[in-house]
Length: 397
Ligand code: SF4
Image (cartoon, rainbow, N blue to C red; front, side, top):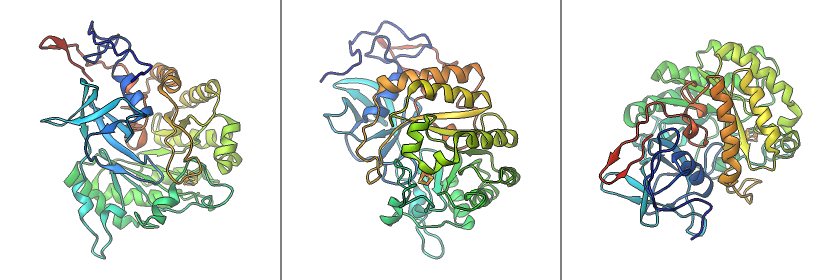
């Protein structure tokens, strides 16, 4: 099988950050591997917990690869050379017979087997994405099913499939958050919502849910919503104890935004910047993030310039590859290859580093987790020290 990577089995030493993988020469380090796996996916040698449909990471397996959180699509042999193989203790990522990295999978969370007093399975209220509890608190959107529907989105699909309920109450979410913390080690909560046509765009309700989750469980919480028509709503969200917010533009390229998210395009990029500025004033630098989806036909230069402008005002641009949602309007689009995404990640990450912004900056939510992005794996690893076990080096994170 051919790949664009250097698979020579020689181990000469670590990369500039002190990280390397047994079996690879330069420049294949853990960053390139995780980014490549995000793009191509991984073959699974057995069942692993996989999320199907919805508004967040979807149709994906969730892994830790050498300690990095990674969402990895399950792929066929013709699409990916990487195989996840069970070992005596955990898993390994293999290329042929060469073991590239250690891996851990997410097992089915224990709280999924619980139900509320009125019989609703916890699993229909919130899911565990690695170590983050995630829920779409209102599973409908004003744009769904009409000309404004975001083409990459799948918010209505999991509802149609009966995998979730249309509206979660603060009480339900609080109950599930405590169980997810106690039984499965959830460390934060990520709450999103479909957009409404109200002045607040749904922000007040998702923040009310966050407040209940935080009061019950003590977990830090991120909420995600569209720019409210009245920016004072953002202050109200802050007053409710929310830690971090996501206000997602999705693409800095205006032509792409108009094609993939017509309603967001009408809101306009400057309205996003105004909302972000207010949110940074309320929540602090690095606590405000936006998804930036790669692989939708955008101009990379415009994308990087937009990300830099966001970083300049303290907004975390969470750059992710398009992962087409089965059943969405972009279901037939391919995911972008590593050769496209990695240079963009590198430029954005370098600019973030100049501003002192990194994965540790954000208290809760997608920008803390980053399993869907290659950004975190590119951060310098200050504690990484190359070590040698047996005859060859082993990988460090
Ligand atoms: S605003 Fe777009 S991405 Fe968000 S839920 Fe609605 S359709 Fe989906």
